[in-house]
Length: 102
Image (tube, rainbow, N blue to C red; front, side, top):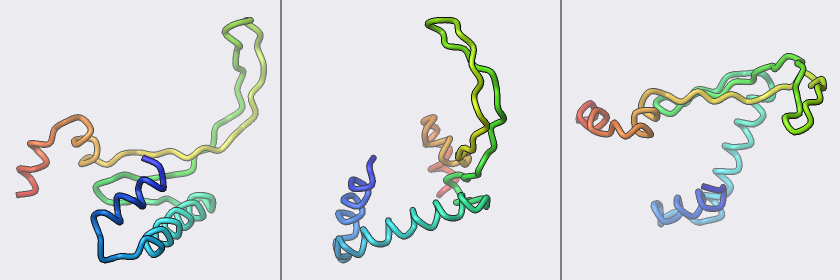
């Protein structure tokens, strides 16, 4: 799902909201999340998952086509760890999720 598809879906589910307001809300949320992760803080959204900033150490890599080795620099990456309910939904354990919800 792209950002524009998310906005369109929210507009369909919430017809009382103006599309520009939904777009502004989605943009603000994503921008705040980006700034928080860039600052090295953790984001946790209950039942969905958590986002953290992870440091990757420099390492030696190899080109599989030529076999040539080369050095990769240290990098920073965003790590997402899904929450239990999200994992259950993805793994099609919806029965457990629905039973617990009732």
